[in-house]
Length: 470
Ligand code: GLN
Image (cartoon, rainbow, N blue to C red; front, side, top):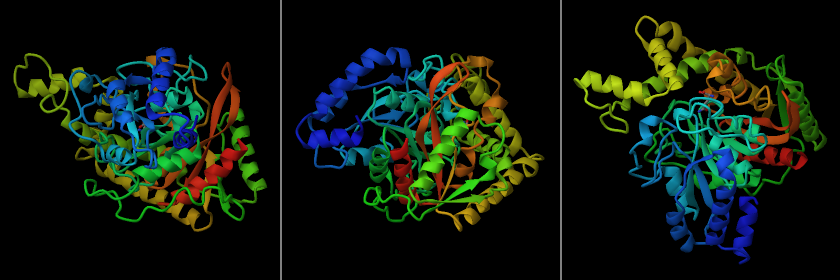
């Protein structure tokens, strides 16, 4: 059931928060063994909260699954890493958790992810494998793969994820659920373990657009604890949700419909575009000329920021500490060597390289300049159109491949999701059908809709119209 439908049942007295949790616990016991979405859950504490849930609040009595890189007081926050899986417990609630609680929701369950959110498959988790509930031989996508898989598998009502370059939208697309990346500055990141601070945003993964709107409503808004979180009013995301797309201008960027897209993905996305046109939207061809540089730009900036953010994991303050160090340098080195997995090390090495003196101007400085060009592409596009439509990922979910996967090939698959983070705009993935691919028969496909900075209200309205066609 959707969050919205469960709320109606709660208000009608047809169910209770503890009954919802008990049913979830049953579903997890029955199915999570094969999906592997949960790293841990805390049923007793959640039951105690559910017993006192205030149903008059907007999310009263609704359990929400949380990606395991968002801090919840007293719970683990492993970030999918050996570094934090031994003994770390969160000393505080992230702002989004505080806001969810204030709206009556119950943070329940810690969801698997690529280590420190670095990846697109959840295979980079150091802790366990998560499988796509539509085909257990396939990846759920990532890095919020546990969040997406649980919502798709009906072992969670709704979830929070984080999105630095697609980590909410891409797993949502692969698992057939809705995933919203809010605009940079719309939602506080206080209490999100930082990956790349100029790109990271927290957002919902849900079974409907309306559910996503309800969660965004609860978590959006200013926060004195995150100076990048904007002090601007939060609009009503639910009021205009069903107003449709009649008269709206929707842009089709030629760079997002070129070669390399799986034919089944192309067919479903184009059908979704035509269905919006049939509802009265006007389609506008346009160009985002710097799109070809998004992958290279992102994979300089994101590792650069990651190398800085991850320097705090040094064996002194958080998590894993190497045994019997010879001296302080040995303690730092071995703690990091033992605690981080291969992809995280690759990012730290790349990031340190592009920031080092002699290379800074050639790589990091250049990337920042190209980032400005990418942002301007979107600014001129949004002067002409209300939103932009594209695929989320070039192909449906691939098979699980473990360490045989080539990192460069993985990076290239992020081609459609990185630019919105570089530009700071909002973006959503909405299911738009299924297709056969590489031996799989009915694999979900997502439609990506991009909106201007802080344009979530209209983005959700367009997404709602697209959802009605799917
Ligand atoms: N796949 C991208 C990466 O590996 C994006 C990850 C994310 O959004 N957290 O960096």
